[in-house]
Structure formats: C-alpha cells, structure tokens
Image (tube, rainbow, N blue to C red; front, side):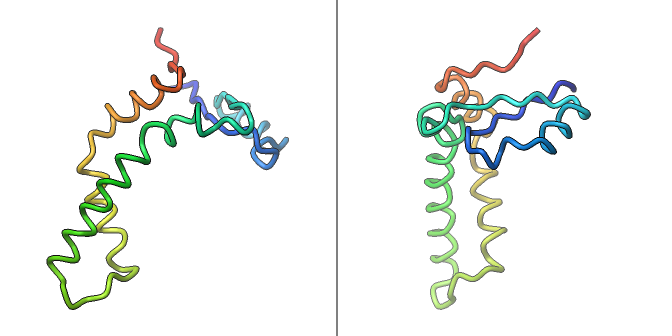
Length: 108
C-alpha cells in the first residue's frame, strides 16, 4: 500500500532529480539518513546483517560437511544464501533493526 517509504543514506549518488521525479510520480517517500552515520542509524546494518552473516556461516559449514571434496562455487552460492535467509525470523529481525535505529514506520 502507498506510500512506500525508501530510506537512503546521504550519499549524493542516491539523491538525483530523476530519482526524485520517479518516486514522486509513484507514491514513494524518500527519507534521507544523515551522512556518515549510517552505521548507527541504518536498520539493515544495525539489525539484519549480523544475524545473516551468522546464518550464512552456519549454512556454508553445513554445505562443506555435506560436500567435503568439492569446492564451493557460484552455483552453490544462491541456494546456500536462500537457506540462510529462510532460517532467520526476518520480520522480527527487521522490525527490531528499525526500532534499534529509532525509525518507526508510519502506523495509522
């Protein structure tokens, strides 16, 4: 449902007139985070990537145990990453990441 909220960091490459026009015409609100502070206030960095890295390491280890003589290749990357993502409680992790950063999506 509209509006869609798009959080971007303050890098100038993310703030262009074509992007602004596209978002305006498609019901997308852009929220620009403070530059050089995204490690503190960016929800994915703060709340999601750490659990994802741990789940990735676990799934990669499982793959290696199941295939001891094989080399991990590009073909193995996507299925292994999918397993790692599916093992997480994504909604809860994402919600907590936003909450940790003090970003509360609109709730009418």
